[in-house]
Each structure stands twice: as C-alpha cells, then as structure tokens.
Length: 294
Image 1 (cartoon, rainbow, N blue to C red):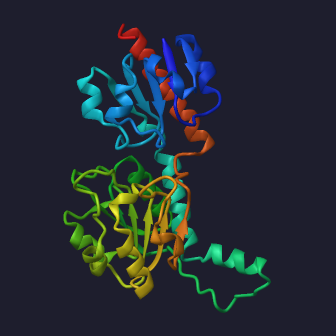
Image 2 (image 1 turned 180 degrees about the vertical axis):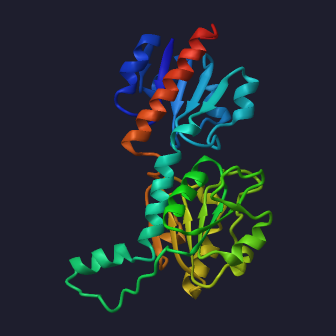
Image 3 (image 1 turned 90 degrees about the horizontal axis):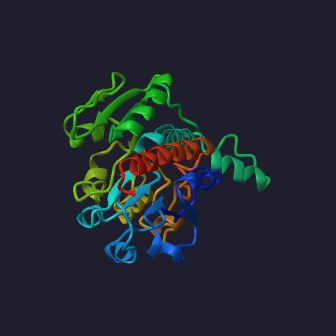
C-alpha cells in the first residue's frame, strides 16, 4: 500500500506509518496512492481525485472537510475522515490568546517599545473580567474556549443550531439576540452554505459599539469588506483572525485595515496537536487495513 503525505504533519509520522506500506511526500506519486493524508493546503477536488485512480482513503489532519469534495470521493468508493477531536485545545488556546492580546494592545505596545516610544498613557487597556463573550459555533473548540473564559469569570453566551451540552455556556436560540449582548465574539464555525458570509454589515450593525471579534473557524464566514468598514467606523474595536479566504491571503483589505491582529493559520499547528493528529491518523489507517479494504 502506498501512503502519500501531501501536507505538513509531525516529522515522526512517516516512520510510524511505514509498517503499513510505502510512505512518500512526492506529489508525483498521487496516481499510485491508496491513502492520501492532507491538511488545509491540499484541495481534494474532482480533478485531484480523478488523478488518483487507486485512492481508497483520504484523511484530513484537522477540523472540517471543506477542502474535500466529500460527495464525489464517496461516489468513487473513497472513505473520507478528519481528526476533529485532536485540535480543540490547540485552536482554543490560540483564540483565547488573540482575545487577550487585543484589549491589552500587546502588539502595539511591543512595536512601540522597539521604536523607542513610551506609550504608557496612550495605551488604554480593558479587562476580560466580567465581560460577555459570545461563542458562535459551540462544538469541541467552542467549548474549550468557554472553559478558558470561565476561568476569567466572563459571562459566556453561545449560539449553535444544535443543543449545546456545556454547563458553562448559556445558549441563545437566536443569533440576532446574542449579538447585542457581547463585548467579545469568537467564531468557531465550519464553512457551509448557511455560514458563508454570516457576519456581514447587517449583523455587525446589531453588535455592541466597540466589540472585539476573533475568528479561528473559517475565513469565508465573514465578509471582509464589512469587517473593514466596521473597524474604520469604530463599531468594531478589533478583529483577530487566523483564517482567510485563501492560504496565504490574496488581495484582502484586512492586511491594511486598522485594528486587525493576524496569524497565518497556525491554530492547529502546536507540537502537541500535530502528535495527536498523528495518533488519530495511525488509528484510522490501522482500522482501514484491518477492514480488508486496503
């Protein structure tokens, strides 16, 4: 069996997988691969899948499958999995770090010190303590975010289309009812027809003045131009994002907008998470081999 590692995983993974067959990172060998391991960079489109006539298993290391044409893959008899359980802590920690950094002006404070400035009076901090956090998308990552917010004694509201089974989150059935209550909003949404462009000018207008937004879900769940307009007007105090319309972003107005804190899609890239992803990949490949489908 040939296993193609198409994107970056922990360096120890190829050695661990070698007991199942030949492991390669040579994309030119796609046509001979029975198993393909991807993260966010590789797009398993119809065209990609058609180049892999022997392909039987796709595993995405991470949350979501929006970069895989799942329906087409399954129509070809290809099994598709992700490793959603692995990434919750890693992404939630980054989201929380972004949320702390914005009202404390950490980036501006650091950069100004390097420039020889002393902005002690200019940089006005605000605390997370007793503020209201709205979590939009309360799955594994959203619930990990809630645990951390609870330690800061924040009030935690949540919106999801299914029942939220987390005692720390007060579920609000209507997103439009949640938005005006929140000092901070953290987006943990998958990308689908219902969530694409969910945060637009109409929704921003319903938010508190001076709200902070954090997005570690999917870039296309917001309308970039509307976020920029909110930042420029002061309606939005800050927008922190780890996710983009494309990796890397192209021609996005966010790169030059005021009040934006940016990261290059590193939410799932902690050392510990890459090891957890590898462990789940090993389990999935082993189960696949044992099933006799290899």
